[in-house]
Image (cartoon, rainbow, N blue to C red):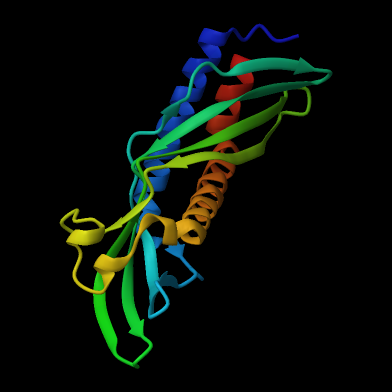
Length: 203
């Protein structure tokens, strides 16, 4: 049986998110965004996105209280985390079907917010901590912009013809790659001796 209260659990998660924020932002320029689907522009052009990498994220936070659920020898800790304003920078080239090619080396895929369901399993007897789940919940405000924050119709032609409805595949690819990078970071973080000991002492 754990004595970890909701208040103490929330405080512990807040501390983990602070460490995760520092780890992610320290290395995000090296986190490549790969194999993105071309963005169709009507039936007459497509935009190829390449050489992408994460550029920024806002301050990560909890999406409410985390739950503490004893299950046999395990303690399950779960809740939702929010990642505000994630953004990635790409090179983008437009290919028109008359074989004209238009370069734009500075396109950004951005979102207002991305949220994930996180589940951590702690086994104090085995001194083991696993991030069992970091699953996408929702992404809002997904769009394309330039380095000055200009969106859609304010972009240079033909990129100004891109619409939100044409970014469905890219939205899910963006969310998936953000999920994997965050999950890798937090799993690496909880495997560190000092972080593991801190969590085991609290539970």
